[in-house]
View 1 (tube, rainbow, N blue to C red):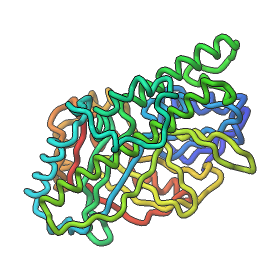
View 2 (tube, one colour; view 1 turned 90 degrees about the vertical axis):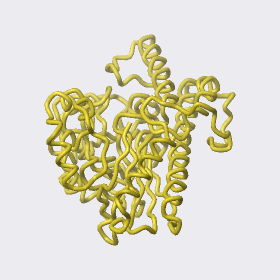
View 3 (tube, rainbow, N blue to C red; view 1 turned 30 degrees about the vertical axis):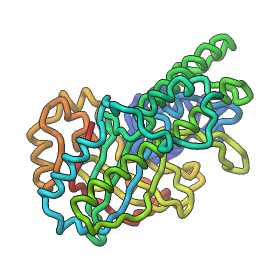
View 4 (cartoon, rainbow, N blue to C red; view 1 turned 90 degrees about the horizontal axis):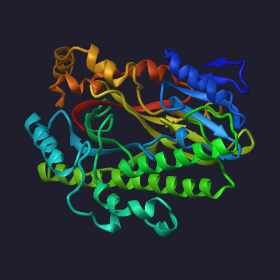
Length: 388
């Protein structure tokens, strides 16, 4: 861990190869009057909107919509199966992947018909939510869909016993983005009226205001919706696999989110911890840290390090932007890299290189840099990948 001082609060960094833009954003965070104790940067940190992705910000008395991000509740889930990944034929894997594409809408696609309301998060008063009450019908078409960008479904092989695993990365789809955008605009408007000098992208809402309470409630719904979204996809994928391998059984699902804000107690104070592309890693907590589509991923156990606000990375992190990757990377080199590993993958065109393996950091270096945050308990190698 490296510490940068000279700002209102220090910056504690587990990242060794941070880009200038992300570092400048971290310095902005460290100058905020409501930032608590220090700013933490995970080893996958890279530039985001207002705040680095892979950043953790604890605040006193305010919530910052852009410190959560537009894909509220985005996260990972994973399930271990009873199938031996080395014994399942490639043709069977290809059939499973083809059926997943037929069953689960990807990218901007939604379901044609509303899904069962019983699949939606329960226990929320939708009519009391200014945004969600108008987005609910749309959400019924979006639950159980993957999305695009870095979202994925992977079949993976465990290093310890060759078991086949299923891993999903997805979030709250378009409802999370709309809620994030709206409350970001509200925060910007009121910060201007309050003559706040908060930097662009770091506008805040005092927690006592109705706007902050509304955002907090709708954010919590988005986190629950993102989980329900992953659960539905996982259930349907298990059904698909069961039809190909009738003897298959499935262990309970591991789930962890990485875009949210929550009240927690750190250093003896109740504060609002914003994790933007960062995963909670309380002592003994089981988490998921994926690599790229061409590299291995990890199931980990949190070590509860207080200096990171008990957090860790949410993945390998990007080493180049999407447009840069499409412009610079060689299509055939990326295809050959995955073909040599026998991975069933979707890359066939230059425009898909934004998610190529070379666009991401080395996952092993990322893991070495956070050896005091998490302990790996399983390594998972990609077998097949579904992307938007």
